[in-house]
Length: 496
Image 1 (cartoon, rainbow, N blue to C red):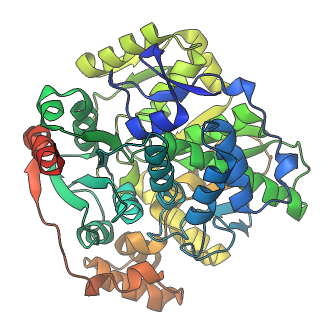
Image 2 (cartoon, rainbow, N blue to C red; image 1 turned 45 degrees about the horizontal axis):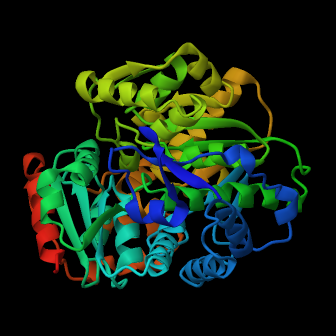
């Protein structure tokens, strides 16, 4: 059986369903599979499978304490008509490669792929243990995770979800998606800070005596990618893209391909690395960042340093300086050296920087390359791809495309490359419209309409009527009030 161990104490070990419930380890570590090298998943065995069948095979192999029937029920329930495409994550060819469109789910962002199944995995785990407590989902978002989590957990029995987002930095569309969320078990709170502040609050809540004392028959969990139940389902679409290319004749089974991934919290690209560990023929993983290029610098130098300016950009889901999932990669590459990880994370907390041993940095360089894109380059890429290929992309996808071109120019690598397209352009209509037209429309909803008129491309159904929904959540707090706010929420959910 695959066990999940804390990155900061490898003796703390849980089966998959308990790790999904816990979300974050009590010592602040992240639950990580103890030995992915024991599992081999050959893409050749998945060539004739649907997305749902591929998901069941891959998630079932890693979460092997769930029964086959439980996993099948979770995958079939998650990946259904909620997605606008029967392929779930369709692969779209363009002149220089393929876009893996991950945004056809209920909130038009890639987070839907994992956050439609996480509530089902969590509810199943709850039933397996015969629990009678309330599972309180605490989630930090830089824009897209929040709405996807709210959508996934709305009115799910025995759960309650609270989402924290930066008051300044998310797009108007993202903010409205969260503020208008339905569900009797949801709460949305703006924070006068950035995503890192929101994420720190959620992490600290797990070990906070103030919060812990407020929990009576309440268990705290998370819907962020710090929860292994969020991360594992993301492995599936890497396999799916590969099998689609093999089935179409674009590559031969066994040939390596590259992926370019826009990432801030390092979860999406870590899923690609895990796919490679399981047997997917991956050549390079191109880590694409915006001006908040802490990951680019780390992958190139081995030094992680958050002592830098924080930038608010047109790709807000990547406006992150502390990339939590990097801790999992370092743990696995160091042969589960939890002493090293504790030391590095303590340095990050107290000094804002750390440097990994040279042998670990060398291992990272065996598969990862890193590039960053400024705002002008992002806008130019949006405009070029639309004018040349007739394809409308969002800023995060543009960052990944620009990184792919930079990597290819620098390396000369001509292997096929799949670019992860992580959100609908209409979630960032103001910036996309300005990039295409050169005109500024400060109102996001008006910009959405103008963008549709300019391109003739339909607005996704879940966004088209957003302006008609009532705003339910307007609460805003200071960062310093975070733990007290969470404790108050836990008291509201507690029962004896």
